Length: 196
Image (cartoon, rainbow, N blue to C red; front, side, top):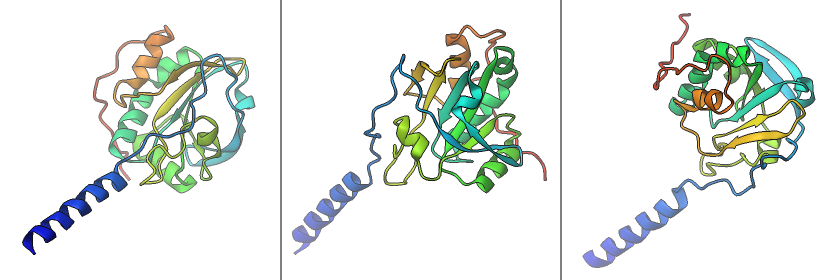
């Protein structure tokens, strides 16, 4: 009887591990040289929410980064790295946009808590993430995968970053684009909450 119980426990643990294992998104990423899929949504900047579309940025390079969830360790590191390098992105004429499935209120709190100077896009129905191959990267949690696109002035994908290190990703983009004043940021950006 003891052996049967141990066997059932082993089977249950194996099945549980397989069922709970995060899976990689199955949708194809947009490839370099292809036109970036158009989108229209709401954008949160500071405590304001306004309509926005990719076409609004025609003539400018856009960094569109997808991340799983506001105010989680990896996503906070990534957002703070973009924050810490934001002046260099601006000097290089680059627009930074973050995108996740979080609500407008969650984005507003995230922006305020970490003094994020760039906008976050709302994608509650995952239409944008699906179009860019980022949707459902962590199916068991219902979260998007971490992937970044650099979109050129004419709307074509210039670069794709499918494997992102949240703490060094922002400077990697600046270096890859030979952006002006691309000096290294600290390897581990420290999130700095704003006092209430």
